[in-house]
Image (tube, rainbow, N blue to C red; front, side, top):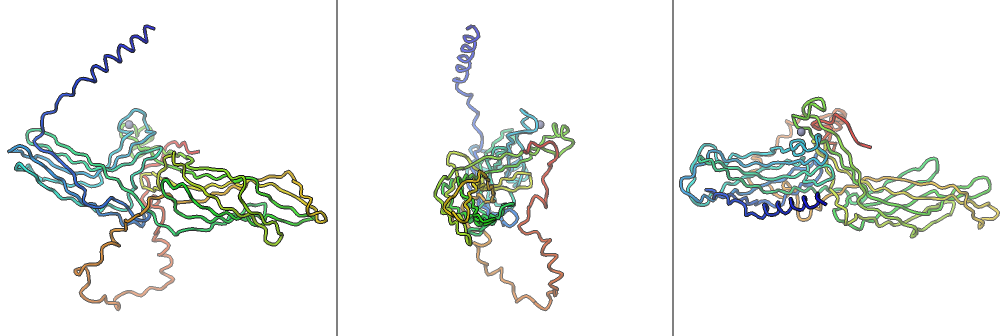
Length: 419
Ligand SMILES: [Zn+2]
C-alpha cells in the first residue's frame, strides 16, 4: 500500500512539473521556411531502371533584425534509418543512422543579410535507385530536408521538412504461371495481375487445376477439391547497422545484423465455388478467387536497396484435395480412398504505389530546340558489331538485375535470425 501511495505521489509531482510553462526561447534573428516546388516525388520503374525524380524548392530566410551575419548556412537532404532491432539495444547510434544524400551550401563565407526575405532556390536530381520511404517491421526509412544557419552571435536556426519518396513499379498487366505437383500428374495454372496496390481489398485470381482424373486397373481415380486457403505474405529483410562503438562486436566496421520478418497481410478460405469437370480427356477444376489485402494490417511496398533493405510479396495458395475412386463397371459408386494431399504453390507479386498522374521526368519533357544536334549523326563512323560478340555483352549489361548484387550491402555478416 505504501508503495502505491508513493508512486501516486511521484506521478502527481511529475505532473506539476510538466504543467510548468516551458521557458520562452529568446527570439531568433531569422526564420527559415522550406517551399517544395516540384511535384510529390514518385520514382517510376524498378530501382535499376528508374531515372529518378527532379526535386526543386526554395529555402526562404526572413531576417528580423539588422546586422545579422551568417557564419555557416547549409541545407542537407538526409536519409534516416530507424532500426527496430538495433545491434545494441538502447544505443541511439545503432538505432538511428543518418546519411547525407545531398548538401547545398546556402551561404559560403561569413555573410551579412539585410532584414527582410531572401530566397535561396535549390534543386537535385534524386537518383532513382534510392529506396522509397518505407515504414516496415524492421526499419523506418525516411527522408527530410534539414537547414541549419549559425550567426556570428552564436544563434543556431534550423528547420526540418519531411520529404516523402514513393515508387510506382510498372509491370505487364497479368501473367499465367504453371506448376506441377509430382508425383501426381496434376498441373496448376494460375492467372493474376502482377501488381497489387496498397489498400487493395479485391485481387482477382483464376486458378485451374488440370489432369485430376486418371484411369488404371479397370478403375477411375480422381482428385476432388475440398478447400482452398489463400494468403498474401510480406517478407522484409534488413541489415541493422552497427555504430562504430558496437561494430567490434560483429568483427569490424560496416558490419550489421541481418534480420528477416514475414507477415501475412491478407488471407481467406474457400469451401465451395469451383467447377469440376471429371471427364477423362480434359479433366479440370476451375475457380475464381477474390483475394485482397487486410485493411487493418499495415503493409509496405516492394523495396530493394543496397543497404540490405528488401520487401517482397507472395501469394500463397493451398488446395486440399481428396482422392476418390470408382470401378469401371460401376462408375457412379464413387468412394474415397482416404488419400489426401495439399497442393501448395507460391507466386511472386509486386506491391507498389500507383503512378497516378506521375510520369517519369525524362518522358515528360519534349526535347527543346537546343537539344537537337546540328547535323545528322554520322552513321559511317559507327563501328560494326558482329551479333555473336554482342550476345555476351547484352547478358552482362544486367538491366533489371538485382541492384544489391552490383553494389552490395554495406555489411551482411554476423548472426541471422532468418528462419
Ligand atoms: Zn551502438
